[in-house]
Amino acid sequence: MDDLPPLVQQAYAAARRVGFPLTHEESDGSGCACLPDTGRFLAMLAADRTRIGELGTGTGVGTAWMASAMPPGCTLVTAERDERRAAAAREVFADDPRVTVVTGDSFATIALGGPYDLLFSDGGGGQDELVGLLTIGGRVVMDDVTPWQLLPDDSPFKRADDPKRRFFADPRLVSTEVVLPDLRNALLVGTRAA
Image (cartoon, rainbow, N blue to C red; front, side, top):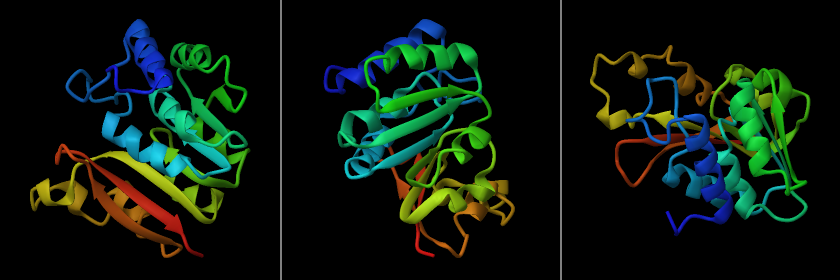
């Protein structure tokens, strides 16, 4: 854990304090903190952005990855519906005026602050409307995806009605699946082209 940015280490400590799972294995299926490989990917994307939105703060692990890399003039708004998690995240970012942690419905809160040149949808609803919150050239990332090749042929996630994959078929996006180094997790990433 020493190789993680200090802000990410603080967010991990906050997760432990409030009992928020750090891995899929620790989770009861209701989600976990941003995985390190996802965080590194988000940091790379955040490095040249000006306005970032995040749906589903948790205790701020993904937020910390992005804030650790984003330029000084960039702002990040993140929304979490669970007050205890949001309060823990606010403590992590208390000294960073670029980051605003809001408690409430993720999509409704984030929709008020757009447009964004990076959106990380890590929870909350409204996925079908996220493209409208992006600038042209803006990117959207969703995590907690099982790589397509690992899904059995009869998986409901291979059907056209899978909400995440359906979202990334939006004709305004140029999209791809990014398989993480563990080969068990993937991200869906899209860039708004129109």
